[in-house]
Length: 194
Length: 194
DNA sequence: TTGGTTTGCAACCGTACGGTTGGAGGTGGC
DNA sequence: GCCACCTCCAACCGTACGGTTGCAAACCAA
Figure (tube, protein in one colour):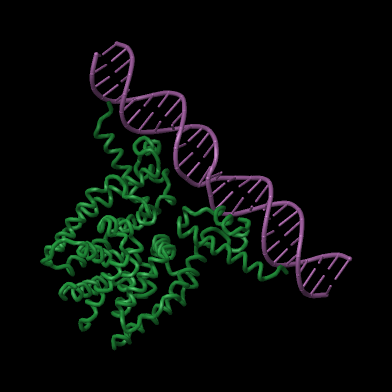
């Protein structure tokens, strides 16, 4: 049998190369030749390891976005600080933001891919952490709050074009936007919950 | 010369068909044969009117998103109500939301397309309206506030997959999410501005 | 030592796709 | 009435692309 390390290394190289290619171009725009070249592996190996281009995309999405939710810390006592840190993280990792967007566009109306259970679980723990920090029981309302905080953190990195239209030259001032969002969250959450 | 009405009708049919196709599939995934078929026009007419597939996409983006900003009313005295109405609008028009996302993914790091001046101008007027409603002078801060309100309204329609992960079955409860967001905005904006 | 399995490669295949071409019909100006 | 121009069509073209094939090398178990 061939060395397992080598087989695993081939697979890892393909996933890393595919992540870059799919982040930049999406499924339809990505090219399997470019992925193979970037990985330094023969393109037939993509079919050997993953089956076809779309299954490779599924694998990239599952792995990358699971990694993403693993990296993001639990909300602590300060939701404004949490959102600011997340906004910084997303700004620093636009390729992950773009994968989230390709995910949304590509899997519209579909069930979650297999393999996303831990991603769901981590988000449930984040919502629970947020509830506890607010002295509340976890509920649908705290899940919505987590979703809204996630949206506030993500949106600037997702929509640079819209930022350019609304903000003009200020669009590039990430710190100002991050601080504005943090202030917005602080203002919203110093009120007693509705 | 051929009847202008007929020429304009061909162009309009192509744009309408292209809007649906690009909203669903993006540039790379869209098919010019499908666009022509949907428009009931020969595919060569796409090249006659627009030049190539990407220029057709540019035309669709410019027209559709200019229409979008024209349709959205100015923020009035109640930003929470404004955001709720916009959230409802985006939920009812997912194809426009998707075009915004394709725009963001496709034109990363590029200058705005020619023809978007009125879109920029309308957004400037919205930011000004928001400032006036708050008894403030228009400033970078009110532009950021408009951007944040836009993000809050858009995010649920943009990220149904993430909604599914964070909210589970509640992801389909648009009214609950819209009201949560409106409450969040009301709470944030009853504070004196920082 | 041999045979079977696994992994990987170079070369190749078929077609789906964006785009082009040659010609037809209608219209208006002279 | 003729010619030039505009617009549109059916048929076509070349190639970029996802995916496949036949074979080689390495490894392991018997």
